[in-house]
Image (cartoon, rainbow, N blue to C red; front, top):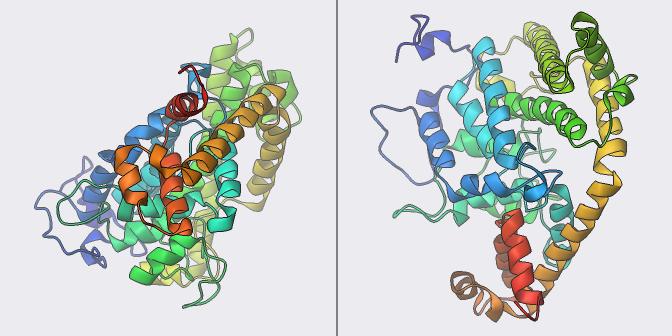
Length: 397
């Protein structure tokens, strides 16, 4: 396949990148596609999955009906994929693998963002708890029921590895599973994802693209929602200087353009810093293969210490002024009640589950039934969870 610049993908690929032609394959053997690489097929399967479509009506901070312009899990995943692909192109990585991981990274999230996850984790605490990362792996390896020959999407080892540990190693040594979320532990018994090593660089890129996207778009969404104002950002590192720079260069610029111009410059600076720090780490470590990347004591893809500190300050600001704003608190309080009450009722009375899910739960132990109910609730969109709660608890529905 020839790129626009005249080079093939293989010619542009760095030695430390993940090579789709030298991968470890799929759990269930399949013939290869004559027109797409293994990672391109993974990306396409993720896009066509039911779990990916449901991200359209799953939100992170606002409920789906708050407004049409706030990010959903779907729009966030697309923004992460764009950043991850651009970074991968500069670094000589496999863009398709980075894109696949970016598109899949939020598949395991519950309705109502982190509030929903906290509520489901609390409800499932007696049964092993809930972890969105483990749930994403469970979705792509088991819950998606689309193919005749296997459950899940039968993604490549490299995609599963990156999805499981994109934030870094999960256990300190090979063979150890203590402290792992039960869904990760369950899959590790079927296929060793080497959870004690660093992930490939494409997964590392996807993880930091996620940070870049949600920090900048939460500033955008918070301003548009009126949870804080531009003046409140003045002392926040990175953000305040960028807004002052744009306001100084374009006096009188209307606020929507001021916000967009500033957030896009924030993304540029975060990306430039990441590329510079990653370049320094690559020059120091000089990995010559993806296995050498996995063996490194620290990630190869990173931001500078100064930028990490600026990001931490921004997250602290957003936590205080956005995630704990009374309007958001009211929504998250309702979300916790909806998720908790749904779980308790459906676990106690599985006959109230829709037929397909009731069949799955029939005859199971208490723990196994709890995990089926957890799968059902985690897959709900915001609006479906609200509607299902009304159907089950409103006497006049």
